[in-house]
Image 1: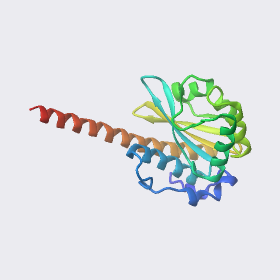
Image 2 (image 1 turned 180 degrees about the vertical axis):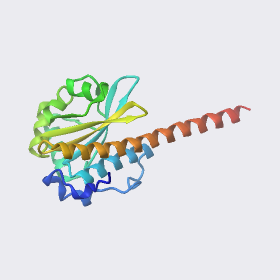
Image 3 (image 1 turned 90 degrees about the vertical axis):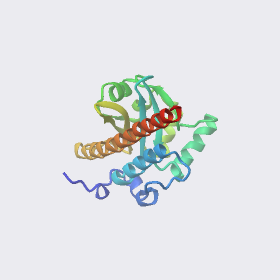
Image 4 (image 1 turned 90 degrees about the horizontal axis):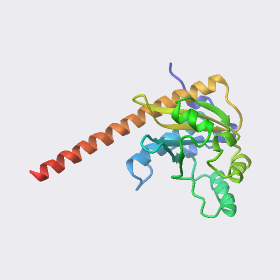
Amino acid sequence: HNISFNTFPLDSHAGKHDNRHRLKRGTRKGAPPEMTVYQDIVENAQAATGAAFVLLTRLSPETREVTLTAWSRLGSEPVQRMLEAARQRLPGLDPSGMAVKADVNPCCQSIYLEGKPSSVTLEQLGEGVLEASFLRLASTIGHVRQTFTVPLRVWDRIEGALSFCTTQGLSEGQRHICEAFARQAALTLENAVLCDVLLKQLDDLQLANNEL
């Protein structure tokens, strides 16, 4: 089915920011190519669905660690206010790149180890991951109270997840839209993984040629 994401706002607080925070591919100068892809995914997911924020995490199959890889609207005024307020209580706080075990709480275990979508409160998703004070700030300043997280599958393996953070719970139809976007994001990740594999093969071939 063809879905017009831009005509279906999930969050009235985020809708007015949609066009302002949309990124075009390759606009983050100086960023590694894979990081640009991840940021494109979350910015476009937020703009398309109208969620307050969208987070992208990656799962390491070797260590079973989940890393926060990209966060939409990171440079926006609400996010910066939230981080500044949080750093007054937690100096040096930097959520980007934060890694936790995939089984840190029941919600994360269900998402990353069992591959199930999860519709829970922000507090439930962040249990054991973030300080309670930071979660309260996200609710107060960022207007985030609910989350809907969809695992990202690449070749039948969980590569990460896309979390849609909203002011209220989503309807079944809204969740279907988020899942559809997550499937598109998974295809983007699959292409990125294929590029990584190809580049590694080229590097190996170049190394072998140099040794001849």
